[in-house]
Image (cartoon, rainbow, N blue to C red; front, side, top):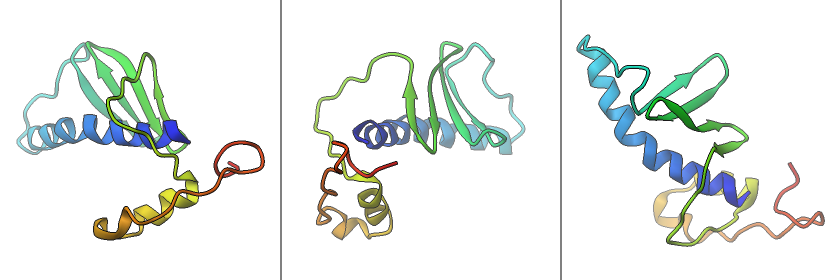
Length: 114
């Protein structure tokens, strides 16, 4: 679960500049980056977002989490809110989201049984 939250955070950080840059290019009829370029592709048929660096898939974001080919380096902290904690934070205003407590660990030793 920690990886999912971390993954979503990383995906948001990575995706925002690329998606913002790609939309004006498409709207203005400009060419999209070459297949060997660093880019983000959305695959609506598979419900996935693919992150490419130098033409190679570096990460895939799906509903079940972020799947990264190599390392994730972190300078801060990771909090495992569990699935219900994530849903509560998603549906809460940013001003009060930090007041939501993480879900307790499940009997299986992790957060939220998937």
